[in-house]
Image (cartoon, rainbow, N blue to C red; front, side, top):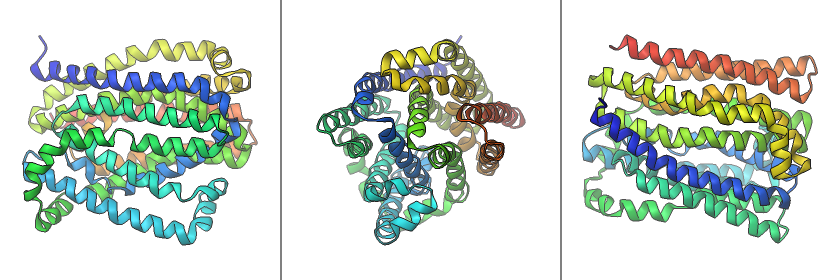
Amino acid sequence: MKSNSDNTLFRNILKLITGEGIGRAIGFMAALVITRLYTPSDFGILAVFTSLCALFYPFCTLRYCLAIPLHSNERVGINSLAACLCVLVINTVIAGIALLFFHSPVLAFFSSASIDAFWYFIPMAFLFHGISEILSYYSTRYRDFTTIAKVSVARMSVGALTKIILGMFRFNVTGLLIGTIMAESGGLTMFIRACWKRLKAHARDVTLGRIRFVLKRYIGFPLYRVPSQLLLISSGSLPILYFAWHFGSGTTGQISLAINLLSATVSIAGASVGKAFYGEIASLGMRNIKEIRTLTLRIMTRLFAISILPFTLIICFGPWIFQTFFGAEWTDAGVFARYLCFYLIFRFVYSPISDGIFNVFEQQKLVFLLEVSRVVIVALSLFISYLYSFSVAYTIIIYSLALTVQYILSILLVFHILRKTL
């Protein structure tokens, strides 16, 4: 018989998957139009922009947002949110000033000179992403997954509609960038309306002393989770930046479309299952390790079963699917998607449970070491490909196989943690 926690978890997952699934369906339908309004080169520049922004995102709140759902005390919860907002505002100002005066050398350092003309979009994306992240974790604290699901739909709808409208008016890559920023800001009013009464009721509990307590109590997040998140993002951004540097924006656009569409499935699991799982085990705490272990095993088994059909279809029919739905010029994206599926199957299983397990069991140092190993593996695969002048296809195959091994080892480590703490 399933426990109450088990039933609650799967009800919350269903809510989030419904919202995330609708949002991704909107994104997929929009992509059928967007890929005909913009060129692969435009998508290549967008990929560089999003990859660079992703590298900056861990600094939005210095990962203090992860602390918002953890503590049962309401005063600590609201002061965690206040601390995150303070950090976000300060870091947004710093990022804006730094890019204002040094955008060209900074972007050149990250092999992102192609977006130098659009540097001012980066602080905007930074701010909107940070606010959305903070309110999302605050909603997770109270298991308000209905609002999170609605926001997922709003984000995809706003971003897709903006890209289509601007594409029709021939905005070229600017339309894609503005649409991406609008997607980051989409749904913020929903979050604010849903949280307003709670925020207003607890606002009087916010004090400078309590904010300092939060910053000190959860110092492990900026010390270990920021570097870990940077390394995680780097492992995903490095290939995009490498392909843009070595093979050009056209090829990068093809790879970007393949990664984005395949990652949509992973994102549904990560955003939906991950948030519900984190909220549930955070409420259970370390005293209910056996129940957490049972939930973890059940979630991962079901995720693996779900992943088999869609990824098998891509492996068998990827080029035909991309050519049929997005046009003949996107056939290469289908070929690349076929190779990427191998590691994405294991990422699909691992990603939703990783944050919850490592945060609840306070394994921040271990997360850092895992991310170091992932970046080393990715960098090594790209270096070998460059050293031997491998083609795009062979480079992607080596990259995918390297990450497959790394994710399998990460999954084994999760169960080692759960057995060790029993």
